[in-house]
Image (cartoon, rainbow, N blue to C red; front, top):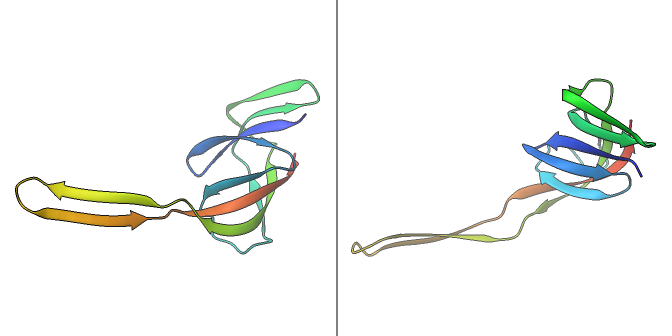
Length: 103
């Protein structure tokens, strides 16, 4: 089992080969290849590699599958005694990526 801990979109994500993950929106078209080079930790063939803070020679090769929207959040603002009420919805733009290779 090969896996890497990668920093992408302000989050640290445990990535495994052949799985897909939802990240914050990455500009690009579906089918584009993206290399994530901020690898913090790598486990490959019973060998651990830890970066200080990142591994310079390793990267994770991913492919954009599609752009999606996250689940709907409701934002409700109210000010007491002033009859002020605002209801607003929000859906975060996300990008679904597939891990093709961990190098």
